[in-house]
Image (cartoon, rainbow over all chains, first blue to last red; front, side, top):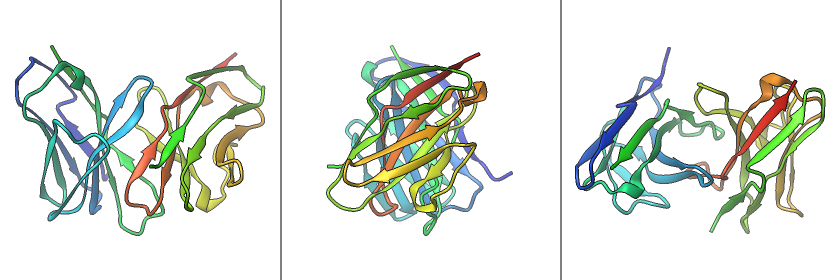
Length: 113
Length: 108
């Protein structure tokens, strides 16, 4: 089945370390998104991309960077992780022209000590 | 700026009771509204969208532009409806803004 896959699913790291979360999809969608989920705050948009050459900041992009290596791959990096970046991170995809349905990955739980 | 507010973090009802999950939004234009659901150990998924005016799993949601609300309703809750529900908004199908979520617990 066409899917949205996130790796790693769980990661524990230390303050100051560089971390990369990867997202790949087999849905053939052009749009990809990274969200962060925190208790009581819901999902907040970090970055989004409409194609390989298009990268856009979301609500909370500070401290994060992204790379769209191919239409199917969208990676999120934390250059120097800090404890308040401990959260559940979701990748999502959508097709242009689709009436608003986002397809989510299973999430990557990151803990920064 | 766009904002989606879900005032209830937790809503507990008994099986068979009506349920209403509240969602209010702030946006000066004409947004499109959605409800997403996350069942235990499953991915976040679309439940219903305003543009389709559909009923899914017995749930409906009416967009009230005067009150800027998009409350999710079901006349008779079932135990399998227990999940986390998120209201979401988009203004041009580019960016999607989510509320903080409401956990629905349907008791037997």
